[in-house]
Length: 113
Length: 114
Image 1: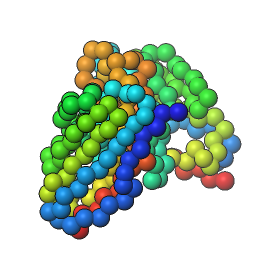
Image 2: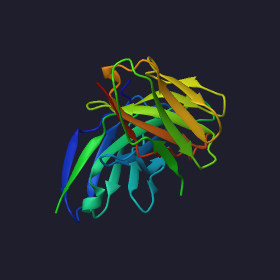
Image 3: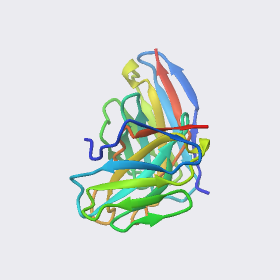
Image 4: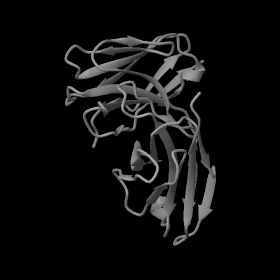
C-alpha cells in the first residue's frame, strides 16, 4: 500500500545541495513524515522526521509543505558517502494508532565525484 | 549507540528446509520487527512484537512464524522454506510509545532457498 511517491532515482555532483521530493497526498493528521536512508548490504539508517514544522539536524533539512501533502529532504554539500536509497515514510502517531513504518522503494541517489 | 545484531549474515537452505533467523537488541527497546526486502519492493513487515511473549502479524506473514523469547531476542522461523522466501531479511527495534520514534536496524540476513 504505497502511501508516498518518490522519484526512482536522482543524480548529483559532490558539493552540491540535493533536494529529494516526496509526495503524500493522502496523509492523515496524526501521521509523521520520516526519512531513512540505506546503503547496499546495510539496514536503513534514520535521517530525520517531522509532523508540521520544518526540521533540521546534522544530516539534513526537512521542508514540509503547509498542506502537508508533500515534503522535501534537503542534503547540503553532498559527498560520496551520501549515495544511498532514501526512503520517505509515513507513520501513525504510536500513541493513537497502529505501529508501522511503510517503506516504499525510495529514491536512489547517485553522487558523482 | 543502539545496537541490533542479526545472525547468520548469510544462509542457504533447500526447499522444505527449516530455518531460524536470530535477532538480538541491546537497546532495552520494547518493539522488535522483522522485515523482508526484495528487488522492486520496499521493506515489507512480516511480524513484530511489543514485548517478550507477544507477537503481532505484519503485512506479509504467510509462511513465517516468529517468537519473542526475551526483551532482547526475536526469532523468525521458516518451517518449510520455499524459493519465494529467498530475500534479504532485516530485524529492527524501537522504543515505542513516543512521537520521536526511531527504528534501529540490523545489518541483515541474506537467505537463499534453493
